Image 1: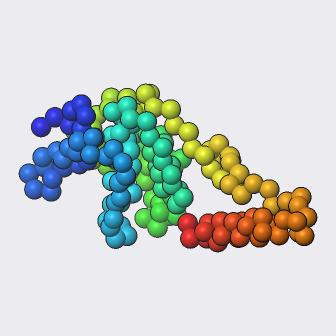
Image 2: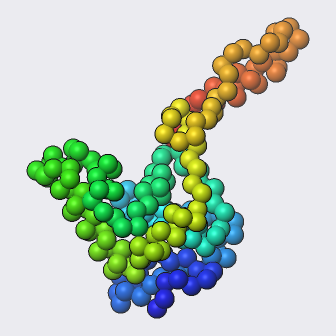
Image 3: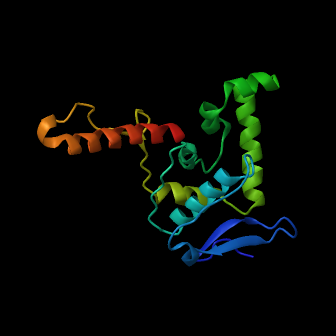
Length: 184
């Protein structure tokens, strides 16, 4: 079965028989949630679905307080060791008793084989990269487009006698926002 069907998102393959699993893009017109235990593949599925939506020309806004979705930028059609090497974990290479270059070569070969096994060609990956404008906004970092999520911490220029309720609302909003950031 063809994985490049208009209006369908290629999600993966069935565990038995290896048939492609295609999801009608129109089923995702409102919201979606991915549930699963740690290590069950939630992030991989999320990145996959986002890539498919982007390949289909669907404008996509990704809100990712944890920071996993930046992986969508690791888009290397040829998956060469040289492309992957800067992203390799030096500690992982050391634990495996290999150099970072050796780990990159192994990961590149595995990645190419896995993608080919799923019918994902370098051309398909290049189409995603070449036809999508990626922009990541990053609070407190210079990796992406910096943004300030807190605004100024300067006290409002208000008189307590005249504006006590407004000032309390400002304080409550700021404290609640800071405490909510802790949960991210």
